[in-house]
Length: 258
Ligand SMILES: C[S@@+](CC[C@H](N)C(=O)[O-])C[C@H]1O[C@@H](n2cnc3c(N)ncnc32)[C@H](O)[C@@H]1O
Image (tube, rainbow, N blue to C red; front, side):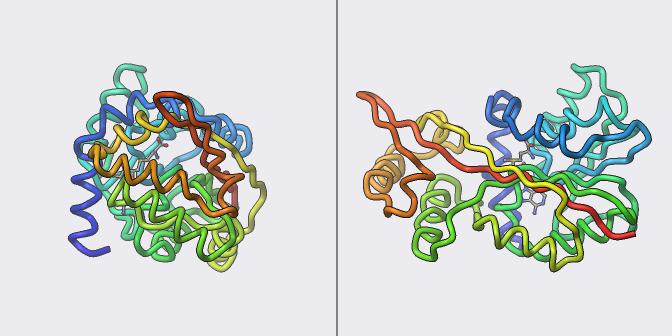
């Protein structure tokens, strides 16, 4: 990851920590419950949460495991995570500044690695996966979620242009089959998947990343002209003063070999 890409993430998220802390989609999204249900965390486990944001995944797992290390590239996000952990009396959660593509941990350190709604920020996703697999213990688990797009080249580009206009630190959202094959190629065995649909109100979604009025107009225009292939995914619903649309999120639970 280049210095400028890192700086862009830090700039974009440095001013958004509070917004992510109170965002319902992040704090209460269905994928948190799905991860818990599919991963079945154990009280002896040491867990690493990558790109923790305001810590919602780390905070969800902490009561069920021995220890959680919540990592992120953005200091302000980690400060917010630590604040929420203290508020909830979680003394087994610690924070550490770390780039997902170069993790400062020994090989085979964690029973579980989690990474939720962040993979689309990593410019070298295969580096991140290599690092994830490296720090997992033998038989260790990955609890992963990210947004997905459709398997159509032009629609995939349209989707990512839309997301990047809202958040310049967005790198790429992939179709589900590609995501799954990236994990399989890194030697992980996929044990469970689940596709979730979530609905957003346009201004709330855009304001979380401080989108300018001019760019909001461009985004709304793009949504009025979505390609046919994206209609089922975005499913835009227009009202007098706003627009609601959906995104798809994929949950993937995978295991490293013995
Ligand atoms: C949407 S938030 C993550 C949400 C969070 N995982 C949750 O479950 O609520 C995205 C986070 O990814 C972080 N991030 C982006 N690129 C990163 C990288 N290369 N390494 C570590 N963190 C990164 C950002 O700083 C931001 O806090």
